[in-house]
Every structure is written in C-alpha cells, then in structure tokens.
Length: 51
Image 1: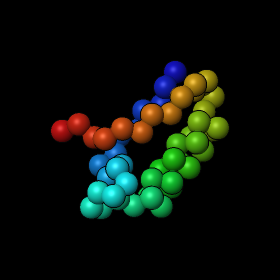
Image 2: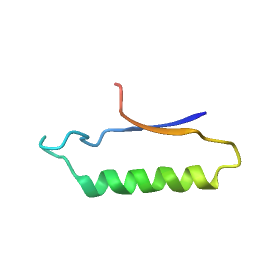
Image 3: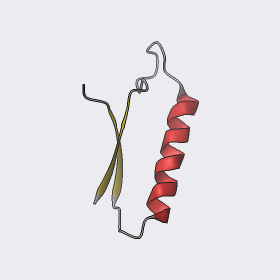
C-alpha cells in the first residue's frame, strides 16, 4: 500500500516559494501517519496537486 499525499507546496529547490521546512513538516506528518496506521503502508509518495 502506498500513502499518497498531494500538496500545492513548491517541491523543487531553487524555485520561488520553495520552503524546505514546510516539506520536512509534511514528510514528518506522513511518517507519523504511517506509524499510526493499523494497515501496512509500504511507501509514502508526496506529489504535486493535479488541478
């Protein structure tokens, strides 16, 4: 099972609006969700939102 998290945060370093702390908080929250889940989650994918 893959936990997919969509975000509108800029994910490319060097681009306007890139915030490494925001991405780290997002990653940390995803890992916490993975650890709290009763269902086995094999991977976490953080992807840009598709409009």
